Length: 267
Image (cartoon, rainbow, N blue to C red):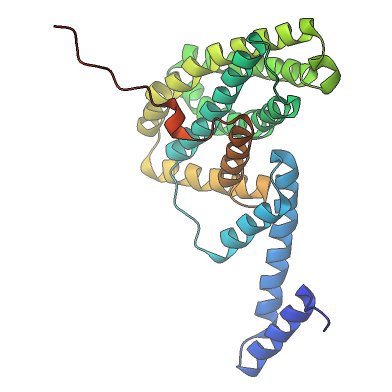
């Protein structure tokens, strides 16, 4: 038997809808919208390195289900969670390189690509387009914003260096591996306080700086940008990718980070 193709199934469903009295143009518009979203999801999959199947699932669920309401600050802070997990991968990479243990070079390269496309080109752009200018215009936290902008630039330089050093030929050189450790350590050292300062100072102040209507509007625009950029829920795609990388290094299981129980305190 010939398998049912997507177009055949869609036409059959459309015929059933028409027979039931549904507007055929409405179903066609729905299908066109889904196809556009699926195409964009494929682009998002290429950017973040997730499987096209997972990206398409995100595209479908994002189109058929009501969009989750996420505030601007919540959106930015949960994206910081992806960055924190990427930094843990860098830490494990540093540990293995320092101990002269083997590490798949693609894991560090894929982590750097995730940081480039999800954090630097998307997340940081949201901050630079929507958050930083409002503080600068209001004359508030200007020095902090200046430092954060500068750190975005320096972070991109380090990511470019990490990507250059994580190709298979460079990883064979002890000098390159030493440089790679230096760049990853510098990246971690900067971004841990960077994101902590944003989460505890800048983002709470941002909520106070703008009206509730403007705050909600910015959150909605950021969500639209996410779906336009990744063709679906970019955050979910990024979480899937970082989990995949953690599993390759054996650091996905959260329980392995739990310290041993302490014995009785000495008398």
